[in-house]
Amino acid sequence: MTSAPHDPISHIRSHISLSPELEQSLRDQMTECHFKRGERITAMSEIRNHAIYIKRGSARVFYISGGKEHTYSFAFSDQFVTIAHRLLSDSTGNMTIEFLESTDVIVISHKSTREAFMNANASMAEVYLFTLTAMLEHSHALEERIMVLQTSDAPGRYRWVQQKYPHLLERATVTQVASFLGVTKETLYRIRSGKYKN
Image (cartoon, rainbow, N blue to C red):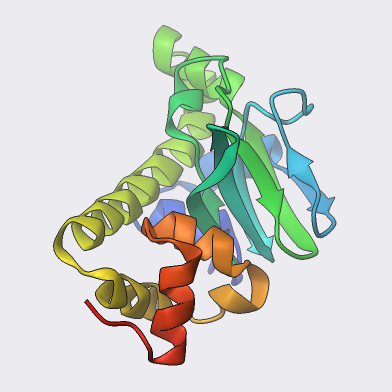
């Protein structure tokens, strides 16, 4: 059986073999939700401790420090939205997920995942597969971003984000993208206008 596009099962299969029974058990744990543009998942949200996969749409994860928003990550259709520390803790810290457009997601509870991980509860193993896959893909994306931030100048970072997320500036603000790249919005404006000088 082939997974349809925009299905987290295809991501899980790229890392782990799934029997038909395990796949069905995993699907039984999933819930679909819809968010409008601008809606947020905060520490007070009902699904704050769920792993989130975007079927269609986009989101960003950010935190506030010193009175400013700092963009931690972006996620688009057929990607996971991941906040790593939620796997092992009920704490959500000060991370917020904001949806950048009308977005359909699939969610699964991190609480069940932690129980499977801590108690080796075989009946919950399928839940752990969902979160494990999200974490593997998050780790890869984070490593790539760290290398770009450490080795590229501001124009190089902008070229990378254009290649990685071609439609990002159609959904996110210049301020949000600049924060993600670790540059000022003024620098990003200059790069985009061709007026940037080292």
